[in-house]
Length: 261
Image (cartoon, rainbow, N blue to C red; front, side, top):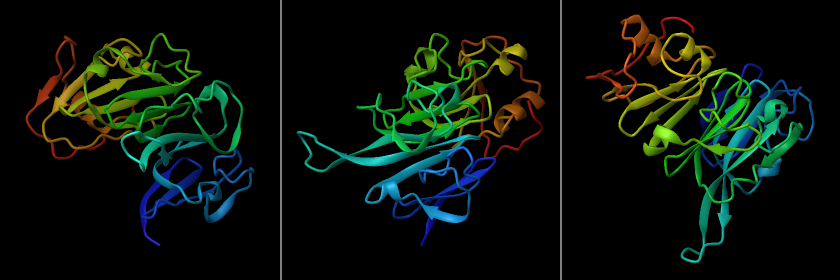
């Protein structure tokens, strides 16, 4: 059996195979393994509720898990059309699962407010879930005390599409730290949001105006309390005063972490 992706939370792990099967293991205390109970497993166990379906992406938070699953839909133009739908499970505190409540889900549960969007990526933070559609739009849900949902007017109970400047860009990749979000656009602009960035004088909490551009950058990722590329910017002393335009870098083939924020 070929693994194509392994995704780790602090206490549990999810694995996606080349055939789209989803396996989970480690600590199941909060129902994060999706097997209908809170039991832990020392070895990977297939999530049986997805039999016959193909998992595209998955992500592990601290107390919850999310996955993009291909679902066949009826389409007037295509008889067999699949669409990526968002499923979440685990501890529902802070409404991190996107179901409008704080209930724990012990099995994979479809985020029903997402009927039309076709999702391709998902990321989990400490108390939030972020999802990306194939059309480059970002949706967020969950805790917002640090402004990480990028939607100052949203209560976080249900998934909300990010508007403003970011909605005018085609987002290609998303990533979550514990309390912050980073996205990479098709123009290699990196947008960051969190109360921490506001504290550094780099923007307003929850508003993704803290951004820079790096030519040739192909991906972005977050640690628990840092963003690798952003740490590099701070180390170079490049503080953003005018948020109207992103910082410009000629090339950056790799980034290294320098510290934590």
